[in-house]
Image (tube, rainbow, N blue to C red; front, side):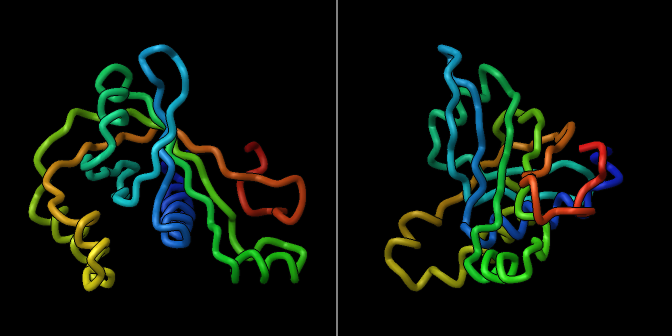
Length: 166
């Protein structure tokens, strides 16, 4: 598996998974060595095997990253229509999910372009009080440099979806 060669597909699978659930799961390691998983709806991927997320509410996530920058981000397509179509066909209509591994950088101020992207993502829900409370005031991000990936695989219904050496 070559992240650079497969990036377009990996990016698409992660974005579809995030769209179906509204978040990605980011796994970090607590100071005592135990795992910690945080749902984050503000992950954005770039064209160059990197990305960023808004570091807004998740205090443990940021603390863990400051001590150990290694993360795993996972997104799975949980869309009912996706699963129904796949089950009816006896074959996944697209890869169901992916894990991305990488290192996260220090917190920094978001650029105007990054702010614009998050505002565009949450705009359809801003008429709701809860959405305004949860999804506003984003100001800081953390960059992620991805090193490799692993597809979410099942023993059947996936022939040819990923390179054979997965």
